[in-house]
Amino acid sequence: MLYDVLMNREGVNALKSLSSQKVVDLSELGASRGAILVLERNELVQVDEDSISISLKGKQVIKLLDELKALVDGKRKDRVALSFNLNEEEKGLLLLLAKNKFSLEMDKLVKLLKKEKRTRAFKVNKLVGALKQINLIKIEKDNVVMTELGKNTIKDDLLREFNLEG
Image (cartoon, rainbow, N blue to C red):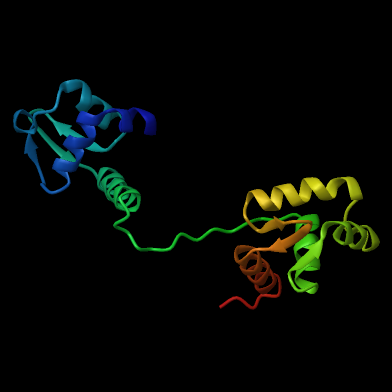
């Protein structure tokens, strides 16, 4: 559905044109019958003999496309919110870093995780790699360092866990 609509450039342009009008004669719209059929099949427009109008669903699609365009063009200043669903081992690693001033040598991290029975030593590299990939930690020389995003994630996770989020 979405692919058909987005690949139908003529249809998207017609939909955009319809979004500012109530009812239009099909001949005035200037879109091909095929483009209109894609819109109609996806319930974005209603066609009655010689006229066409945009549906509520069509208006919502245009609104979202406009928002997406503004975001891509850099005209939108809203912040994007991300949340992570971390497993217990990942949370344990981040909490351990937080307890140790947000930075630990890799060897010490492995020993502490093993001591606390949070994970096995051979899984630490995999955990570190996963958390590094989503920018929650970074590696500086032999140290594993929590990023600002990691600090915020742990803070938000703890607030959520103890029902303290506002």
